[in-house]
Structure formats: C-alpha cells, structure tokens
Length: 85
Image (cartoon, rainbow, N blue to C red; front, side, top):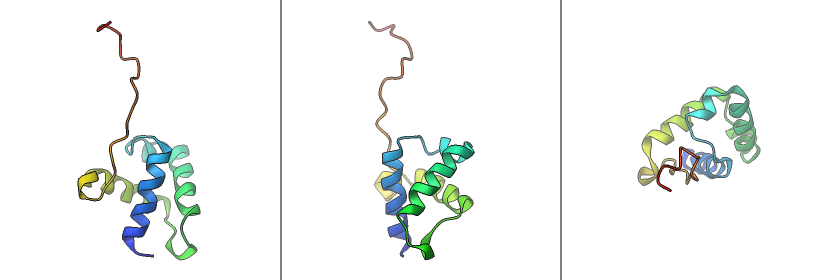
C-alpha cells in the first residue's frame, strides 16, 4: 500500500476520532485506540506500529491540510467563559 493511501486512512480516521493530533500520542489509551482504528482499515503488510503511527500523525499535523496533511478539527465552543453574553 502506498504512503499516500496510508496517510489517507490516517486522515479519515483522525477526522472521525475528533481528538487533537497532539493529544493522541500523549495519552497511551487514546494512542492505542487510534492505532487499532487505523490498522483495522489497512492490509496486514501495511499496518503501523504505535511509534510509527505517532510519528506519522505529528508529521501530518505539521504539514497542514493545504499540503496534504491533517485538517483542523471543527471544535465547538468549550465554555471558555460567557463574558460576551
């Protein structure tokens, strides 16, 4: 499987997972869950190790959507205060 195909799977699962890219590798439980989601969609010869996926995820985040990397997640208002009301 080509790298671009593997990247496409990461990007699609990242959008569905709806968790910032920096949080996934930092939390072992999130990282393992995300790894399983991605690897479930890949053939055996293309599966990621945890370290490889974490590295790829951060590289895709740094690249940005305009250059084929991760899109920004559309986050709802998190209650940072209602001083504007």
